Length: 126
View 1: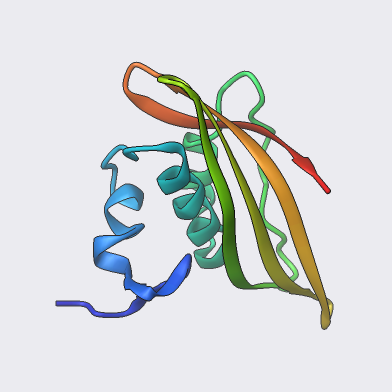
View 2 (view 1 turned 90 degrees about the vertical axis):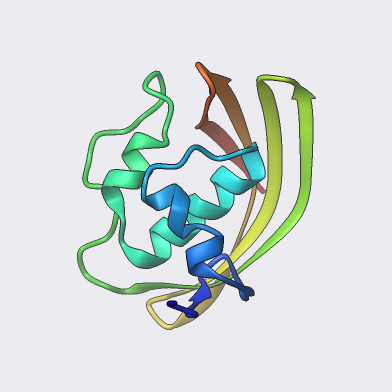
């Protein structure tokens, strides 16, 4: 069994956390999708990021920087709010190194569930 830590939380095992979502299992809630998207950024899984982005707000690729000047370090989930059965918000802080400078991305993301699948819609960055 692969016991490597999950990028979204080193206390979790990737194979039991974000790994199944990256392999195609639907997220059970918006927080799980958000965590898997963070892990996808860390791991360079652009196809997963595009697939999990709602089609109405999905940007055109490429999404990920090609110059490797950005390195994701840590995720902290602050809150997960279910608005109703098909809408939710997740507030988080993602720490990174950007050209060697430490930065914190503080975002409140909106998610929607359609046909049983959660999608990232957009976010407000503080």
